[in-house]
Amino acid sequence: MTILNEYKQEILDFYQARTSYDNDFTYRRAIPLVELAQLQPGQHILDVATGTGIVAIAASEIVAEGKVIGVDFTPGMLEQARRKIEAAGLENIELIEADVEAIAFEDERFDAIFCATAIVLLSNIPAALQSWYRWLKNGGVVAFSCWSTTSFFTPVITKVCAKYGFSLPNLHEPLGSPEKCYTLLQEIGFHDIAIKTEQYGSYLSLDEAKNYWKGKWLYANGHPLLHLSEEQIEQLKAEFQAEIETLATEQGVWHENTTFFVIGKK
Image (tube, rainbow, N blue to C red; front, side, top):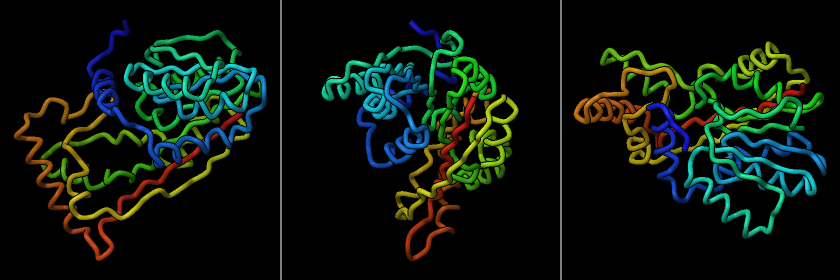
């Protein structure tokens, strides 16, 4: 059984509650990574934080006689993945229930390593990328997706928290621009780095936008909202909703979602 700290248990609980995860958006932010990687039959693939296996399944169909390993610590996500794999009749995928930051593989094992959107949730992103670099064969690729620092109403949320004296760290800061993604991969040793930017934002109704933020926040190294009372959280949410009302237009409230698809070669 995997022993998780408070932060990782919070992540597990969040995803465990998502009993119906797959939708158009979850596919759009994952499948482009497989397309960027230009996989070949016979290759060995690692899908980090595989979730319901969206990337793992897409990759397995390309590598055919190759093999895909998907790692995740959320039993509910993996169960959804197993059902999909069984329904598709795929036999070249192995699912492992484990903390992706605690598991280890031998050096130069994989032709490609994927991480769709979950890389920002890791406690130590540079250390994870260094491990992935070691696990890749020469010529292998790493491919991950992440978001801009201004996506998901983050500027509004941080403004509200600052008003109440809470300096809120931005989960997306380490990889929140193409320049930051490029620099980090280059420092680790990757080359032929390419970054594709997509805007998946949309207008939400005022009610949808006001109810977007639940007063919670994820950040690996602790943050000031972690142990607030329900009363304090409700106060922050009310302030957030008031700020959102000022952003309303005839089209609704713009919800930015700038997604970066990043690939680098060892």
